[in-house]
Image (cartoon, one colour):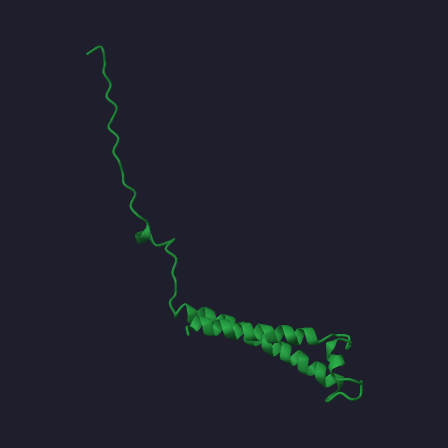
Amino acid sequence: MSTFTIFLILIMIVAFLLVVVIMVQNPKGGGLSSSFGGGGGAQIGGVQKTSDFLDKSTWTLATIMLALILFSNIFIMGGNVVQSKTFDESAIPAVPTTETPAPTTTDPAE
């Protein structure tokens, strides 16, 4: 399994978890997070603790995803820095010069 495949799988898992966590929370408290607990007072940890957990997990998953994307860029390239040859004068091919012969004039007076 290549490094690219490992990072791709990890990024996809974190993206799926991030979507699930974002869809569960509702800033007004009436979304899916309240329907999982049943009655209002019967929730484990209460509504405030649930929203704190969802908020912290959202930020944590977003940070993990950003780190995975940055590390994948470094590790997939193999640590090699790709340099642009735009400013490298030795990379510019020499333009062949063709000499044009000087025009010959025939002077009828000669």
